[in-house]
Length: 123
Image (cartoon, rainbow, N blue to C red; front, side, top):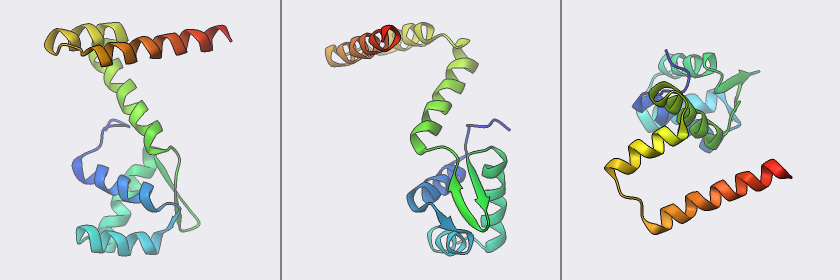
């Protein structure tokens, strides 16, 4: 099981938690019954999986996020980059840009990201 890869229902469940957290586990059961038609045991099984991956925690019957949705998305991207391109961002960009031409707006956005990164490194 890979830490940052989620199936469709795991992703929908995680999104529900991020939308409502912190959320009591009893309230989460009710939300999942309404949204997905799940029974209590299904909710707790899914919650346990995501807690084992250190995405959420169930502390005293309150479910909290251990990482924001944005942090999780960044971790997913990093995991993909490592697995697929050996961690090489230039390798990814080269492969991506061979299949899809970057617009001037996208190129400018990448330049700005690099400039901001360089400024942060020298600060």
